[in-house]
Length: 85
Image 1 (cartoon, rainbow, N blue to C red):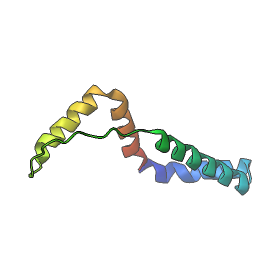
Image 2: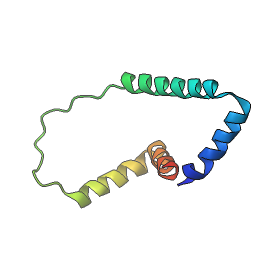
Image 3: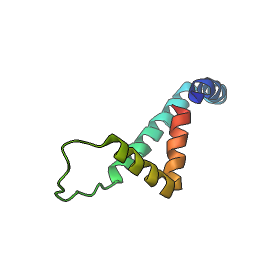
Image 4: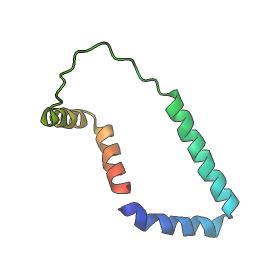
């Protein structure tokens, strides 16, 4: 993964510029911002839908591809996540 290659270089650069306390403070601040962002998101409740007891893997994969084609931002986020992890 690209993160295993880039992360040590970025860490060395940051450590040469700032001390460890500043880097940890930035990391904690990022975690707080991420937590607040997740807390703000509202997930709507779904109505009572009758679902088949047997999931159809191929059908669900096709639906996922359709959603990714319709939403370029979501596709870019998925691509970045794939490259980063």
